[in-house]
Length: 142
Image (cartoon, rainbow, N blue to C red; front, side):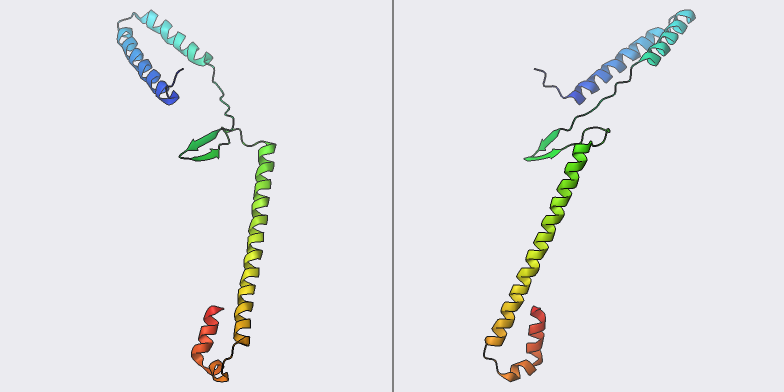
């Protein structure tokens, strides 16, 4: 098994290639003109015929520190299934948020009703309702 990081291996290959190119360039200065021109033409043909590799990445799972995320791959974008699943996830999220908002509104209404019921059933003197501090207390709780 080869456990070398691909980025490290690529950097090492690039470094070796640069060393080899430097050594070849040192020797190229001593070559006759016609040979150096033939080598230059051969280099140009090789570069022109070089195949450009198109890399397509599949979605991958990336895990770091106990978390995982789904990557969308390369630059090819999302397919139909990915778009539909994204729309479905957003729809479920919106419905969930609407449900939570509804539950919180109901809970707040129940709390206010409980306070009102406690105030109405409690034995308070009528002067308490005329007191400005008591009015502020009631407004603060709302």
